Image (cartoon, rainbow, N blue to C red; front, side, top):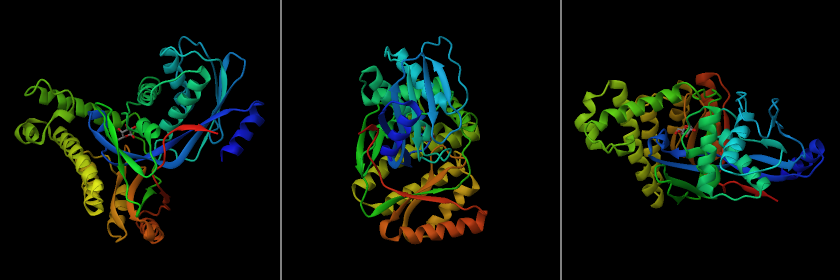
Length: 382
Ligand code: GLA
């Protein structure tokens, strides 16, 4: 793939590029917890974005994609950069953040290509950000720690693109490891790897409903969490995020919250506990318990956090009927996108055909189903 990509770059820009790759991610458990300073357990997956880059001796960054029609050229020293509201904002947001951090680079041509399904909740945008950050750091001849790269990319998305995402997506793209998920504490950004048993595959079922949480409901959920934190601070002023609210606090004081905020808080608090129990279960190789926790997570996202949709619920219910599946849940922001399923490797084909047929019968939609494994994080491609 990278050989063709390099040739394509050279044909368009008449110069060989340096190439970097960044993977998408799937989250096994820990949804809508990252921006509450909580725990998540994502894994980088075998779908990637490639970013090729070479200086162009001009004044402008020229940004193109092999998949997207939009392209952009923007001056390197624009004092008032404005978002264009297309994918090139991810590139520009990262460029601006790197310059704000003191990195200096020449104008360059950038080509982006990839196979991460877009709008499916598998972090195609975070992969662009991380790949571009590596390419521009290389162009600047600079270095930055991996955690700092992840937080810089998150800032690019928060401040320039205008999506208030947490840290999970960028973090997994940069720190992924073959055969492992990551257990991340999104407050301290400490993490450890959790081995995934060989006998299961990560099976991702795409509902084909484009998730549209970007500006709307996602930010509403964040605001609801912030209001809940304000309420709990009346009892414990040290509480700064829902991460700090215990199950006991919720039992004692939860009744005073408006019903919606009680449900949102209950999801976040119970989900954090589930992530830690899930890590223990995987450490023991106990896939049955892991699967049960995934199912509970889905129910909580459906009923308390209200970020699922009928199509995702149908995919989870179909998977629950399959003896080959240990657990299934929606993954990512929700309102469409994908489910993640832990499936016995030997029975993956059967699982795929049962779910695809069932989903088509119920929803009249042909799902896409991707079978993948956990892979290494972003890096250069030789
Ligand atoms: C999106 C965001 C992440 C995270 C998930 C929900 O993917 O980008 O930061 O909040 O939603 O868990």
